[in-house]
Image 1 (spheres, helix red, strand yellow):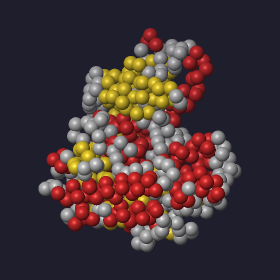
Image 2 (cartoon, rainbow, N blue to C red; image 1 turned 90 degrees about the horizontal axis):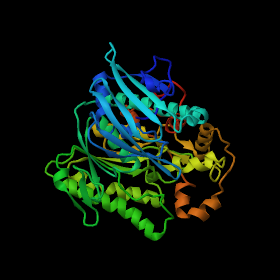
Image 3 (cartoon, rainbow, N blue to C red; image 1 turned 30 degrees about the vertical axis):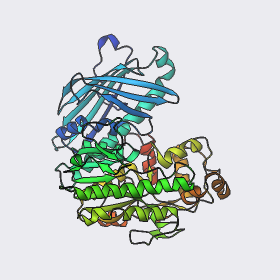
Length: 489
């Protein structure tokens, strides 16, 4: 029920009574798996999460169950202060072949979207999306907004096909196609939500570790962080655990109270989880625990890898204690991977989301000269790296989750400005950063490190987005037209 890109191909069938007023979009792309596998990906729980474009402020708020004739999905779209609820109902559902969704309520006057999965002799398949729609407020919508709407639809379906292609190829490349049971803490956060969606679409069973019963679903694992108690029965049998939960480091100035909260949420929370895992009869084979490249401290022009020593500062101390808190799991024979994550690039949140407004207003520029390192990673590459670490029994200990091309702050901002077609002329002096953000600004904005993912590369991991410009175009819907695969050669 999402948005599409125009392509030169046969037109969709349109109901005769609407033919004179309906617009048509088609997108057709070759996919790297069979039609049955392509269909299965779309029918699994995480598909909607993976298909919502990251630059859109949208979320799934209700589904009536598995994809079937008559099933309903409700998505909330936010455009500035305006909330729009989009209701769509499915019919013509044929596993292995396709399905259709029709808008019951939403932003368009009419919307009918057919998803088709067609086999190829090569064993691969084609994904075809065919959308017939009528702009809002006819006939004025067509007179005044058709071009803008068409452009937005083009961006969104181009993204959908690119992500679907990449996810399917990633799944096909996994060393073992057998499904796994994976528990995720922080599953409602930016990374956890997309990781859960990716794993679900790949056929894995995902269990969320949650800290409140509000919004909890069947199968969720309750964690009372005050008492340190877990629903151990539901943790039994999980083959992998991914621990992402923790207080937002950039959520406010680092007062002494806030620093204690940040440290406690990571160290105490990780220790509680690891002690619970150690008590299980059927322990997970692997624990992937988030850490950060802040472990290395400030590095000027020096390059760091997993063999580099601990740096100085509050972030380095947090990372050290955070990683040490996994000892109980390691002592219990669980393979532990301490994933030192760089700046995660996603339009849904984090650094990129915070930079967009000033850069779009033409107020982008280097911070304090711009020499400090920015070690970053695309969200989808981070998800792939986590999955790679789950699957690869030879990976343990520290693991840098960063792209192989870290940039200086100046170069990072220059690339973002180029993608947005904006100037890069407004520097932010160091004294202003210190005055506004204090110690947090000193470590997060004025310092940095150039970190290399040596262990990932040594084990043969392939990045879909090794260059910053490619991931920015993907996340912001500014890819080159007719580009489906986003992998750089």
